[in-house]
Length: 193
Length: 167
Image 1: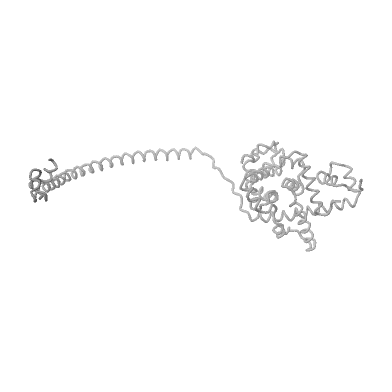
Image 2: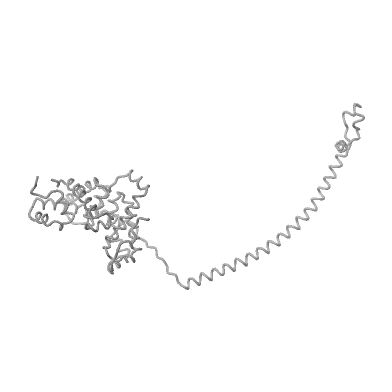
């Protein structure tokens, strides 16, 4: 795993809270595993592989926690590791072969089968599901990089500089991908004038 | 053509960084149409966020727990125990080797004696067999040519096979 970002590659400052957060693998997994799985799943379109990568990512973060000094948030650091693991997997020839043979996005029906545990009327739930499906459909037409920056901006609520740190892209490249992704999603939602 | 509402670029710029352009922020605050569109976009993304997080949380809940490798620290006591085990192993292996070498020598001597006896007996048997063969060879053989008196000068009926071969 030559390309995986090592913990020491991110400059860090002292942050006792962050280190203590990294010290407990179970709470780390509880907090970040679902987010990591979602990010990886939407990046590579394979939920099973996303599960495996998310697990590898958490182990790497835990094992490399002593070199974390807090110049970025724990979230940014962990997503950076995940992003590099994704890059390693997508460079793998076997992955490239199987990727051609399967869908590039997670099946919307699988997502829709799990409802968020929020108390809403059936009408509202249906409306929300339709909206989610529209966004999902819009994301299918995006490039992997556009999808990735969109997910980091709107699902993980990172700012542009954090996205640049996670993905290793220049700021302007991140902005360009975001412009295109937003335009495409807005068009799908019927908001483009 | 200038529109009274935000264009795509302004809209995207606001969603990427709301604080980047004050004029855009002011317009959204004042324009219900643009604000409504912004709200619709956020609502849709929020629905997608909730649905996908519920899905990944359900999958993560079913996933196997993460096991970390626990490396045991090296302790001096463990080192001494390992060294003692190594010494015992060396002692046992050298003792066993000596024992096996002695057993091998005894076994070799016994084998050599047996083979010597066998060899003498075998030689005697071979000699007896050779004597029998020699006796058979030296017996007179009737020669068909001699019966007709054609080769009186060449071979005699008393010639043995061995003698004929020597001639």
